[in-house]
Length: 276
Image 1 (spheres, rainbow, N blue to C red):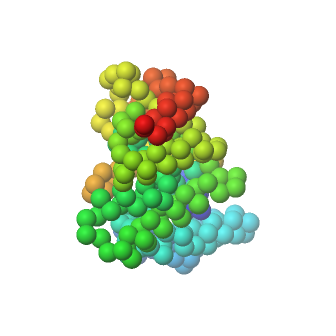
Image 2: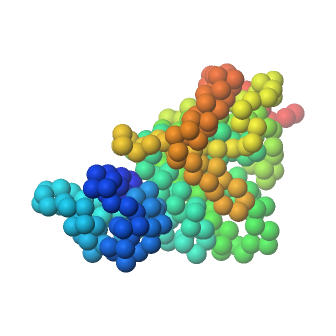
């Protein structure tokens, strides 16, 4: 997804520098204005011929610049690991997985359950079994595989940093059974390279009362932050500066109101102890 986003950013800059509308750019490659918009946002791949036609329209003649952009175009069309699961994943979630893999930092707030990136395999299996009643064993296995593949892709060597704020209710809600629940808490304690905070019940009201969300930051300076909100039926990506700022301010409030990481670890450890 990084390649798509970089390609889109460069194409947008070239188009705007020439004063060409998205509609005119779309007409030049026999596509719609919305297709150009999705291309510039890094949401879709593109045909090599279309990129060549756009570069010609934008007056790009420098051979080195053309070669760089065409290299990005080739990277943008490279399939991601999640495409093996396209029969299970809605398009909006596949788009998010591409974004997630491209970030340098991900900040998340979770209200009900441990976020997928931090779930144990048995916790994920129990949660997915509940989310898809009557699911066949083979499909359940593949959905669990998606979670595990997602974790491996994110926590790769030199990969991004995760800063997660968990509402205290996440630690008390039993998923699966008490054994699954306890081992999930122990897993949270064993995680390396993750900043983990718990928002206590005592924190009271806060700006994120509408629910869970994520903030995605990318290593490329020209790519702005994205706020991501998921629902049962889809997702919303907020990219306008004012919309991202609302979520950023809410996240900053949560991080201040939450226990610091060391205190959070002590609370998780206390809850993970077997009950006598």
